[in-house]
Image (cartoon, rainbow, N blue to C red; front, side, top):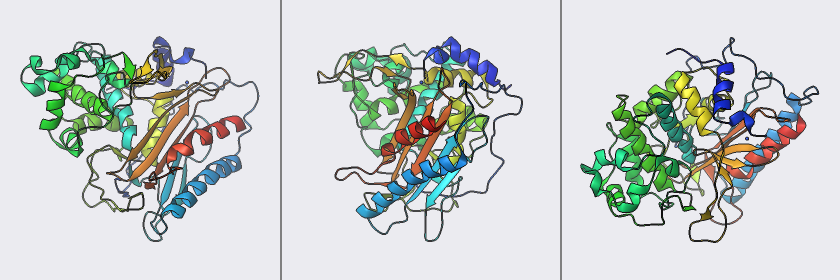
Amino acid sequence: MNGISRREFGRLAADVGMLGVAGTLAACGSPSAPPHAEPTETATPIPDSRSRPIRLTQADLDRIIGDHAQTLLDHLRSKAPGPDYAVAVAFAYPNHEFNRFYMYGTVAERTPPTPRTIFSIGSITKTFTATLFADGAAMRPDCFDWDAGMQRYLGRYLGNAADLSATMRQMTPRMLAQHTSGLARDSTGPQDGVGLFLKDPSAPPPRLVDVWRTHDGPPPGSCWVYSNLGFVTLGYAAVAASGCAGLGASYAGLLRDRIAGPLGMPDTMTVVPDGAPVARAFPNGREVSSGAASDIKSSAADMHTWLLAQLGAVNGPPTLIKGIATAVQPTPLSVDICGKTQRGPANMGLAWQVESGPPQIIWKDGLTSLGGCSGWIGFTPPGPNQEPLGIAILVNGYWDKDGPAVIADNHGPAMLKQIAAAI
């Protein structure tokens, strides 16, 4: 499929309003390194929106990123001494010559991480799920409709769409992607991920199907609550819609064929292949296996590519680039948190969360007890007085048994703001 230039990305992003917004392990392994995707030489450079020269130096980056990474490592080691903790950071700043990767700690005895070390990315997976649906909507809107009821998508798993509960039939993929569906925070268990990420075709487990048949919660769209159950449901909806479009019937295949393959992200997958060197992961100081089917696995190298994609700095299939621009576009929300009088987020993308700023930051975090890792990815989209920057942090452990928690979220936003302020 023909690629799309950075100039065309800008036009598509403007169509959905992106540029009009001021400022927006499992285990670790190091497979052999195929050529990695880079911004194409023919892409149109993103213009420098600032009136003065860039002040940021490599020494500034080394200090800012290094201080945060070392603090994170020190805090982890103070909570659970001994394990081989590692922090891998990717930095994206299109059209500027800075080091892209920053590696700290170890993933095994005397073995530091590399840009190709694979981590479990937890709920950062949600950004891929939303993009899969958005890519489909750009290509086949007759099969992928953000505002269609869920009977269109889940009926194929039930044999009869009428088996959905009345509340489930009122939900839409957009509500699932923006956490306004009213579904519970937690999924029904690890088998939800096994059915979605490992099976071909993807197939929901009986407990999840029972939820779809019986759910009776808040009116969909009436309130906001972060929902892992909602996103696993969106994943199954994306697979069902892909069947309608003749694209395949497994999440793993769609991820490979629609995102990872076209963008050149060889480390992004649902299962680490056999034979890959495995490092340990330590949630709350205990070692876990790398085989959890709870999320996508990826590397700092691929997270760098994913950041560039959000910033419009890679070429790719036109529907995918349009889907990415749609997913990162913040839209207003005006609902309370479910069961509370407190307001929910003022704005959300599709899976992506929004810090209004300045600078405006589009971000997503990830934490997985099954895969044992903590992660954070965020970027400042191009806009008036705002440079296109991105940071991704992957950590092979965390601590959240008691406060303060030791997770990547504690450092991602501050790191990005400090870098933006130094430019």
